[in-house]
Amino acid sequence: MTNVAIVYYSATGNIHKLAVAAAEAAEKAGAQVRLRRVAEISEEPLAPNYTEWSEANDEHVAASRDVPVAAIEDLDWADAVVWGTPGRYGLLAGPLKHFIDQTFELHARRGLMNKAMSAFTSTGTPHGGQESTILSLSNVFYHWGAIIVPPGVTDDILLTPSNGNPYGVSATSGLQAIPGHLAQNVTDDNLAAVGYQTVRTLQVAEALTKGLKKG
Image 1 (cartoon, rainbow, N blue to C red):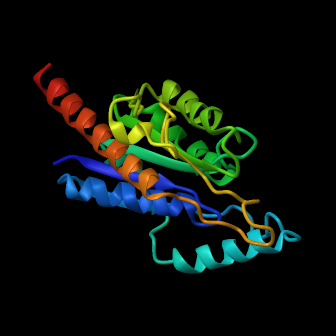
Image 2: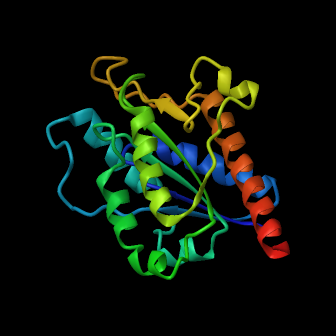
């Protein structure tokens, strides 16, 4: 049985929704799954004067409180890791980068080598740095010697209007969709696509594990 860790950071709940869908798809496919959220690194609010964002953040924190916090041991345990992060100026979010920076010892003993890795994101606008955010995570995977598994254009669900990023599933949160309202715009197609991406990743992990054992 393949071990799959879904490791994510979410501020307002969009990435959390995608992560839950990824975990459910992996479980349905027969994998052992750990759904893990990355903890905040500051108690100071990110956008204290942005009322809608702050309220959405408070609601999300309360709703996801029972999700276990990610630990480096989760990465060691996993055969495949699917990562989720909001885009921050075209990069992964700071709390997730902080967590990744703690992998030094695991990386030093080659504990992340040959693990299957994939990533998904959400941004406030369709051109808000979705591809570069996923590429910023890929830069980390290169150093680890991990195997990157993109969704590519390998299934019809990836061609629906709210999908289409071959680097990794990307949702658009639509922060300015309605004045005074923070929209939660993860579509059903986004959820289906991240499920597909996750199953594809665990299938590659299974093939890697079997092939390496034979070798």
